[in-house]
Image (cartoon, rainbow, N blue to C red; front, side):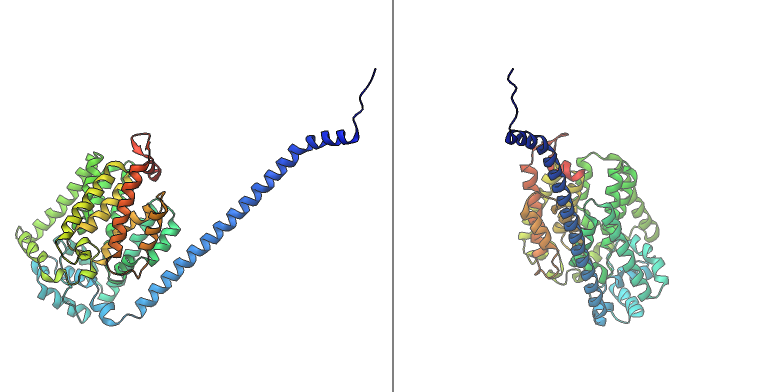
Length: 403
């Protein structure tokens, strides 16, 4: 019988085939380890860069505040009117510019013509405890409260918290909110807390928190559409009850005459001193009537987003749209653009992410922030139109954002 004896090169060929799977497995494992190591190094580098931006932004803001002159650091801060309103709480004299200026002069030693009290009457009662403190102590306590409120937003809003913190360090509305002693960060925290309660199945608590946002009711023009669209009746009832209680306190303390007095106060010419100091469409178009047409377009964009998007994006669009269409606001109110800008960082389109990044540049010319936000609303509409519907009749981007 003939027995075939493999030649040496045939034996080597067989051995090569026998060992190749093992070599391939080792190579794959090595490649996986190398790729993981590269990802880790890139992640650490990314974190280091973000932290550097955060620290640089904070140090820059601290340096600017430390070098402000007295007019900007004391005489022009919006908190001065809040403090004066707290001093005059219980009397409709809080809506008298002369009485407010007198209280500001006593507390700060100065005042500016636009620092009049235009908050709802119950706001003065809320500020009353702070007036027990010296003005400078109350101002810095208020500023720290604003920073804590911003921290609540950053903690509860979905996304990369570290990147959001670094962005806030360079965001001009946040800087002015802190420096001027404004209350927009508190309103943002209340709204975000309400959003979180709605997401976690606590509609009554969510409605109460959103109802407390009545301290800046004019910025919430479009927010009810979000709740109505989703038929969140318990949240709507809780928000309405909260607002009714606040109004009831106003009637009980000031009587029915406060409505007429407050209406007259809102017409004061000092409310709109500079168009470049507003981040709305009225400021963008310098008061020309075309801003009303643009406001209608923004409402339509917001309505479309509200009908198609997740709660996150719908709420962000409603806040941004409300700031744009309201006739009067300040740069600080642009802090309510923050949820939409952070949401845009997760849009699939590179152009939207680039616009969102540009919006954080603190030296943009007047009007550019409004333009950036309008473009982001348009990008959201385009994204929702192009994305296929996900399960539950929501577009895929909406489902992804809500996850």
